[in-house]
Image 1 (cartoon, helix red, strand yellow):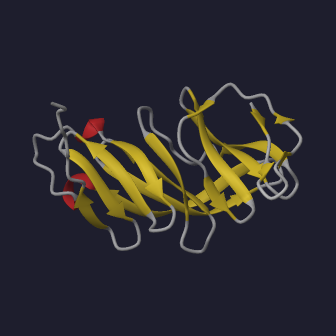
Image 2 (tube, rainbow, N blue to C red):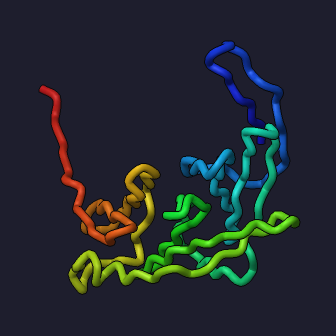
Image 3 (cartoon, helix red, strand yellow):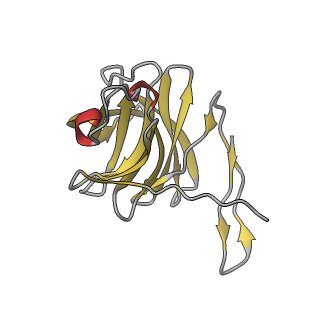
Length: 175
């Protein structure tokens, strides 16, 4: 994995920074302080790629073994209310919100479970809805809103208030 910072004022690229990882980045980053955190997954393991804008360095930050990440779950990095790194884990019919994360000197992230949300109850999904197929498809840092896909459609869930809105579906056919 390689990265470089572009400075728009000078029009110059910084040094290329490389790190070896066996994962790909499939979700947008979250900015926490002067660091960008990208969620990376390799098989069942989740970790973060941390890019420090001040020191122009990268490191892989592993999730602690005591943070349960179920198989077939979806993880989304997010910024907590206090401005720290957090993440949401969506699995089957629940969403767990983790915060108060601490990154140790050995680059292992530990966190505290802040809230567990029963998605089928929050979203008033019909019993026949297969929430096992729900997945996180996006996150808005400004409004602290997560976007969740279910078989009933896409929902926006504002994480502070837990209010949700079903995103309307629009389609068109060209003539």
